[in-house]
Amino acid sequence: MEQQELYRYYSTQRPVDIGTYPKDPDNPLTGFLNYDERTSVEHGAFRAWGEVIYRSPLTPDQIYQYELRPSRDNPDVRRTMAE
Image 1 (cartoon, rainbow, N blue to C red):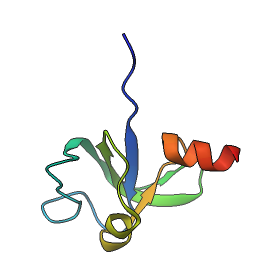
Image 2: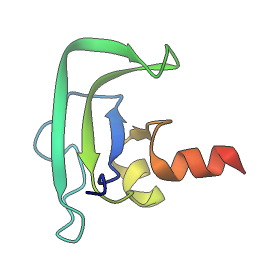
Image 3: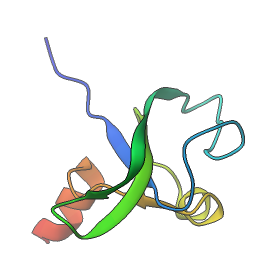
Image 4: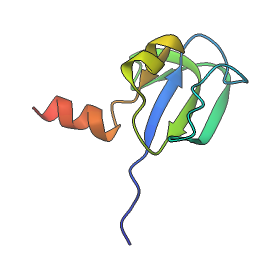
């Protein structure tokens, strides 16, 4: 069975809550996690309040509008870094 690729985005400005992440019927949220406090993530690269997870990548506009940061482990980011 093939493992589904997931795309993780960090909420750097506020905890994940209603209206703080994109709601797209073609790319529904598959999960989220709020941290107890603003936490260092991505090996200390920045701090976040939580994370949201999708099955497909978000658009650059969605990332910008909701002030999210993509994980370095996202498949699209890994491909870009390998180039």
